[in-house]
Image (tube, rainbow, N blue to C red):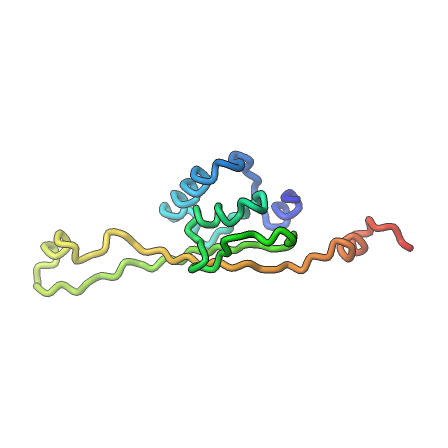
Length: 140
């Protein structure tokens, strides 16, 4: 299932993570994001359906960000999208002329803020139609 998608998107498949390893997966993704290695890039994760909401929460996406708490068990053509948007730190105007003194007093943010957006997209995949187009469905 994943190989054709990875080929089409030009992504490598990393099989290092399994169910139960969500904490490490999330930690590695957050590390890469914080290091700037994911800017403008895509990660595609294939996961067991009932475990997707928990993984989304580990990645910082819950109901308030647009990710459902439960996976629809009858859905086989949904893609969960999670997007991280960086809000650059805002520089506070120093009240005095001594800028260097203000830096030491918290006048400049040391922790940039990330905003998370999630949504579920129905891909409307029709396997019969796909098989007919691919030519692997017998005519008749």
